[in-house]
Structures are given as C-alpha cells and as structure tokens.
Length: 382
Image 1 (tube, rainbow, N blue to C red):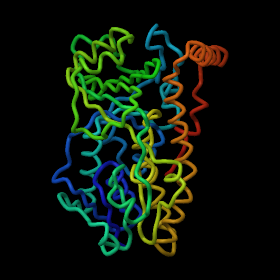
Image 2 (image 1 turned 45 degrees about the vertical axis):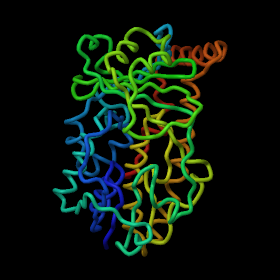
Image 3 (image 1 turned 60 degrees about the horizontal axis):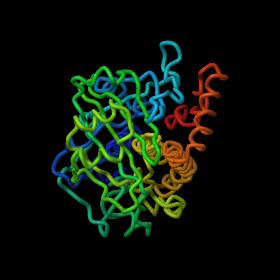
Image 4 (image 1 turned 45 degrees about the horizontal axis):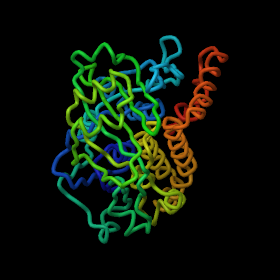
C-alpha cells in the first residue's frame, strides 16, 4: 500500500520511516528544493527517543546530540535554583531512554539519510496541490507544519491563533561564556512576563538561546525575521549577567511568534477518508515543555501502527486520531501552564509557587521526577 507524506520536516520524515517500518511504501513530498540547515536546537525527551530507538536511529541521533543530566528552573533575578529535575538514576537514564539536545538540522539529516538508505522516495522541490491530494496515494499524511495548506481546504480547520508570546532564538559560540553555561544542564530562567532557556549543542561548540517574552501585537512565525541584540536586551534587562552576555554575543536574533491550535481545532477532525494531519499541522502548541517535535514523532509511530492492523486506511486513521487526541491535548495544556508558571508577575505569586516547589523538593529527597512520568515515560512504540 502506498503512502504519500506532504512535508519533509521532522514529522514528515519520521512518519515516512514509521510507515516503511510497518510495511508501507512511503514517499515524501517537500516543496523546498533542499533540506535546509535553518533552525536552532531542539530537545528530544525520552518519549521521543523511544520511537527513534524503535526505528533503529538512537545511536545516529546521539552521535550528534548532548545528553543533559538535569533540567533546572531558576529565578531570573536572584539566580537562585527553584527546582531541579534529575534525568538520570545513577548512571542510567531515568526513563530508560536519554534526554537529548540536538540541532534541528542534524536531526533532519539523520532522518533524511535513513529514509534514503531504506528506499523511501524523497521528492524535493515538489508540492502537492490540496485539490489533487486524494489522487496521490492510498494514504495521505499531511505534515506540512503549522501553516498547512491542507488543514483548511481538506479538513475545515481554523488557522492557529497567536499565543501572545514571541521567542527570540540564537545560536551563540560560547568562547568566554562557556564557564557560565553548565555542559550537562538545560536551564530555564523564570522572570516576570518572560523566561529564557539555555543549553549547549554540538559538543558545547554552540549555546542554544531562547528568550520568550509576552508581546501583545501578533508577530510572524518563521526564520526569516531578524532583530539586533539592542532590541532584545530591554525585555530581559533584569536577568543575570550570563544571560545578558549571551544576548550581546548573539548580536542578531530571530524572533518567532508562537502560535497554537485553538481548543476547537484540537477537538476538531484530524482525519478525513484516507488523509490525516500530523504534528503541527494538527496540534501546534507552545514549546514550554519542549514537546512539539516529540508529539510529531509519537504521532508518526501511532499512525503507522494503527494502519498496519486496520482493515482499511480510513479505519486505521480514525484509530490513530482516537488514540492521539487525549495525549496531545494533555501535553498542550501542560505546556501552556508551564509558560504561565515561568511568567508569574506578582511577587506574592512567585514566592508562593516557587517556595512550594523548593519545599516539595527538600521534603521529597530532592526528587520531583515522578511528576513527569506521564510525559517522559509514555511509550508510543509499545
């Protein structure tokens, strides 16, 4: 049975690999003329790595990735640690698979190389028109991102909504800053109406910087816009020196308006006949739990596994939709709450919330990991 995948990003390539793994003939159609190195770092939780392991790609991914030992939440003003999540139990990853930081381009390269090696056809510089989509294959997977050409015409879904957040992204060579960014930690700096995420990439040769601020006026999403450090610094002016030094060292940052699928969209139709939406084309969410790519990776396995045991494509796609909706909705809502926690404005709110976290960690033998079992312990490939 033939499957056509629209979109050659992380979701589309993973879907092709999962479909091939389950015995389907898969082809990927990407309108860009080449797989680009545009992008920055992404985080792959153990739940995403579990699927990549099942596809035989774990070692290839880890060859390009770093594995943090801790996720740390700290105050942007005092620098004081609020809470720390250990990603290891002794020498072993806590959830059985590692947590990985990787450059988006490196992950796409691993996925595209594996697709070529396994005989999956990659059609670059080739788009499929929505009106002709149903004629392409027995199964059509729409993985062309948040601004999907198909979600509206084929599924009647609303456009994603501006979240009120803008992320300023940059990759910074560490140089003299290396000592201030721990090599084994992903840090979240929590401020009033803003937060910053920092972690190393490519063996510490780059530092991934993401500064998120609340901006009322809708901003475009994409890698095409740039702003100077001088335009960004005022929004993070009370942050500690190591964060401000990163912004200055970046010189140029890329603002990215963050968009989310509305509740109506999340609850709406993900499948129609032999076609299905996957990843951001279906459920764009804020990235405050670093789960956007992971949800597309999980989607890919569940979609392929559902089709493999179904009598018809339509039956398999409906099963995929039913299995994914509750999980994705929970992750999207938790991501939204994480942003609200990071951005608490009132002094009383911050003291109350963060004191509770500190006290819980002290009284619980410094281990808050079990509260993340639902997220990182999930096994889409089971």
